[in-house]
Image 1 (cartoon, each protein chain N blue to C red):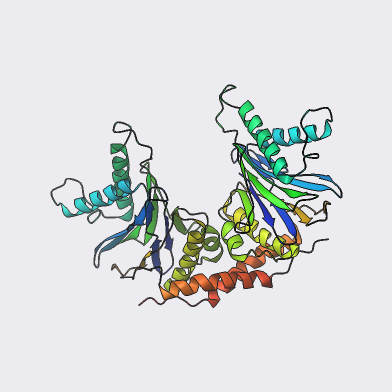
Image 2: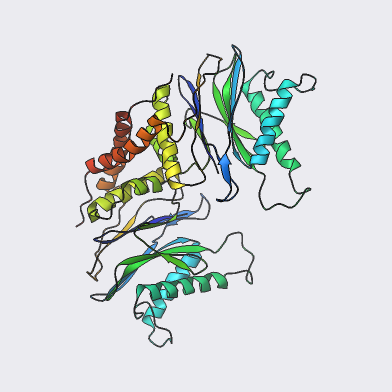
Length: 244
Length: 244
């Protein structure tokens, strides 16, 4: 599995993804699940993937190849005028890749499904996020549901539900995401370090480079260790149940 | 779905279960998922169920009927000498119920699977817990994994992993469980109030009656409201990420 979160703040967008890929517990490795395309001053588009690795790599390669080849008939993600149209195009490409691996080919023991979180901003529009399903359709973020998760989403959801605030700073959002990711890796072997991170400041139309968070990152280790202690302290401060 | 937790402490056992049952979001109701049999001074056996309601009701009815009918050949859960043998008998009964609903009968759109947490103590043995699978086999609790969850276990697992301590009091354990259950119901509609609760004090060999925790229970409401605040405070006290 995988764990990726895309989150919209008033200040912009934040993306975080893990990097573990596995085909059984005896076959796992590190792979990037976050990809960014940009035209500085005009658009930044970030994509995170969960699901079958062959499918998601083919998707990213196709998107990338088509955005470079100028002879294709169809406009690419670097040419389409809105994020909505980019989402439609990514959805169609994803569906195409999954169909190609479909029932006509070899029998396989795995599914070829994958999901995508797509986010970014194109000049003239606002920063936004989409959750794209394997069927190629998608939903857009709203104020009522201001973040998307894909992969092993359940462990890390309660803290996001409780602590998300659209006015948060990027720094506090990353802290919150690290707690959510840490809760997940403590409970599920299919999600693992290092984590990739991307901050997009609204109306900046430029990629802000963020270092990958490695397992020995001192900030992450501090958060991971302190959070257990902080939780136990928080719990201790609540009144105990009175049994009869 | 369902959410049930059975937990072993040095002081004894604690069981908590939700009561929501549903066949689609438009068809849900309240049902008890926790059942206790006892012979005061000699044994207390508690069982919690998750899965197909027809299966779990049939299981409980069969166990109950057999423990009352004295003419049956096989010893019942009120006669078997150890918790291990009770677990074998419950597992065999569960397997029998599922097989009866199996592929020979009507085609159905649902599975008939169910899982069980079984716990208690029989004179001569220690308090213990078993997790029984639909196949009828089971695992016993160990010091390394001192609690079992069935149903929607993922949301509420991180707090249990972080805060469980075998030396906890019953009162603090119930507080911890309420936080774990509250995190789950905030994220998943298939788990709901009221919650059933059972405390078993080691070597007491008697049932301790605990009131059902209703949605308007003032203690639960206080925990639910304060925990969000406590989490945000705990998060605020950790240092923020330093973005370049």
